Image (cartoon, rainbow, N blue to C red; front, side, top):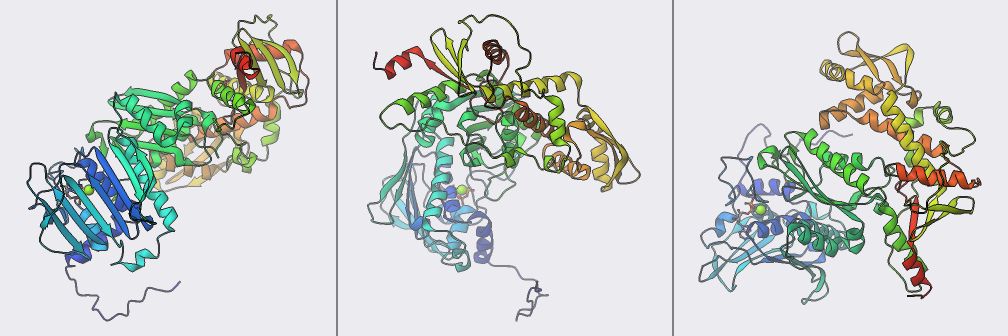
Length: 612
Ligand code: ADP
Ligand code: MG
C-alpha cells in the first residue's frame, strides 16, 4: 500500500476555518449517499409538515430530477433562506435531544442537498396570500421571489452530485437507484398509512408513469396498517401474517409477522420501525432471528412489519447521520419483548401453517393459474451446520446416541383413534412417507419425515430443559488470553455460561481457563465461542448464543434421527404419530419452517369435483 501523498502545495500546518459551502458538502457526504437518501429526507420533511398527500416524481433513477410535492403547512417567505442554512430547524429548540417527535431535527438535509445539487423550493405557507420560491446551486442562493402555487411545498432537486462528480461514479444503474428509492418510500408509507403516496417515473416522458401508489387509509391503526401492508407487500403477506400486539415495561410492539412457512431467501421483507421511524437495526434484526430460530434454517428470513413504540427518552435516534439506527437505553428489554411476543404468537399459530398451505395445494389442482400462496425452498444442508458444528468431528456419533437406530416411531401409545381428533385417523401411507388421515370434515396429508423430525426436536429440547446440559471435562483446560476487562466481563457471566455447559474460571490477569464444554457440541473452539459471547455481551448486554447453538444441534440431531422416507409404518404407529403431533407445540411445521401436514376440507374437495 502507498502512503497518502501529502506533497501538495498547501501548508498542512496552517489551520483554517472551512467556508459554509465546504462544510455542507462534507455533511452531505454523510446524509446524501445516493438519490434514495435525498428522497428519504424530502419525504420525511413533507411528513413532518403534516402532509396528507405526497407525490414523488423521479427521472433517471433520481440522478437528474427528484421532485417532492406535498400539501403540508408550507414555509414562510422569511423562513425560506433559513431552511437552507445549516443547523436551522423548526423542529427542536436544541434544549432536549432526547425528546424528539419528528423525523427531522438536525437541520442538515436541505443545506446538504443544496450543496451537492441544484435545489429549488417553492412553498405557500398556510394562511399566506402568496407563494415564494428560492433556489440554490452548488451552495449559493438568491433571495426568495414570488411564485405560483396554491398550497403546500414543492422541493425540486436537479443534477444531484453535479458539484461533487466523484460521488456520481459510485451510483448504480438507474434501475437499481429507482429500486432503492421505492424501497425508501415503501418504508415511510408503511409508517404513515393515513397519508397517500405516489411515485411517478418521468424518464421516458414528462407525463410520467405511476410506478407506486398507496391511497390514504382510514379506520383504526390495525385496519389502516393492514390495508396499507396489503397494498405494499401484497395479499400473500396479509394472509400469512399474524397480528402482534404486546407490551412490556412501557414499550409496545405492534404490527404483523408472517408465518414461518412464508419465509424469504433474504432479509428484504423485514420492515422495522421505532417510534414511527423506519430503521435497519442490528439489534432488532438479531431479535427477529432469535424469535424464529426454532422454525427457520439460517438461510431463511422471516417477513415482518413491526412497530416498537416507547417514550422517546428511552431511545436515542441521534446516533446515525441518516437516522437508520437507534440506540435503546435498555437493549435487552426491546429484544426480550420482540422475542417473547413473536414466539408466543407463533406458538399460538402452531397449527395454522397448514391452512394457507392447503389453499396453495387446492390452487395447484385448479385449472386456472394461481399465484403462489406460500414460498418455501429447501434449505441447504450446509446452511444447517453452524460454524462450530463444522469443527466438531464427534458430531455424527453424538447424533446417533440420541436416536434409536431403527428409526421407529418412539412412545407409541396404543389408544384407538377417534375421528374427532384434529388430525383424524390414519387410513393409509403412500409413497412410503405420506400419511393420509380422515378427519371429521376432511382429510389430512402428513409428511411423516418432517413431522417426526419436529417431534424428536421438541422432545430433545424438553429433555434438556428438565435435565440440564451434559458437559464434558477437558483433560487439559484451555487457557484463553483476553484483555482484563473482557476477562472480568466474561467471568461475571460464569454462572449463566455454566447453565449451558461452559465452565470457565479465572486464570491470572486477563486470562480465563475453560474446564468443561457442552458435550453435545463435540470438540469446540473455546476461544472462538468466548469471543462471540463477548461480542454478544457488547450488543445485547447478555448472552444466549450458547443456547441458540445447542438448539441448532438438537435440530440437526432430530433431522438425522427421523424416519427416513422409504420405511413402511403400521397403522398404530401412524396413529401414535398423529396423536403426538396434536399434543406437541409447534408441530405444524418442521424445524426448517416447512409445513408438516396439509389439511383439505371436504367442502374444498367437493369443489374440486364440481359438486357444489
Ligand atoms: P430538519 O428536517 O432536520 O429540520 P431540513 O434541512 O430537512 O432539517 O429542513 C429545514 C427546515 O425546513 C425544517 O425544519 C422545516 O421547518 C422546513 N421544511 C423543510 N421541508 C419542508 C416542507 N416540505 N414543508 C414545510 N417545511 C419544510
Ligand atoms: Mg429534514
